[in-house]
Length: 147
Image (spheres, one colour):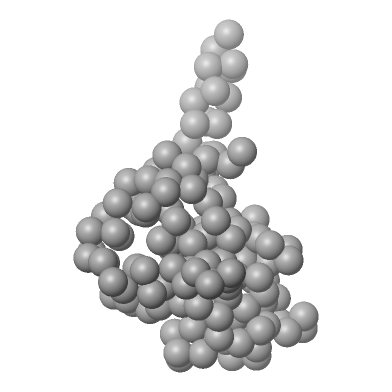
């Protein structure tokens, strides 16, 4: 019994919650380079420059970008697992994105849906963005659980 309790508590301290990433096309941000976004570019990563972080795959345009990500991955991870920030805030739902529709705000990457005449980045910018971020942060706590 003593060992069972020990392993139970050990499990509590060693398990780490993983983010539920939007891995459409098998990569976060659909294979776009998350470091490039911080250079105000949406660039498709190359198969030769990939890594896995938090059980999710990422692609990069160069070894330099891959190295930059590895040095500080949390800085480059898209908010809300790479799902549409506007949908997380306004609908409390995980919605796919257009990887070329993005915003860097307060040194964080936000991705958005942009299809069928709806550009959620435009909708995002028409509202109080700080309020939307707070709303999305709260919503993400609930919907981020892997299904």
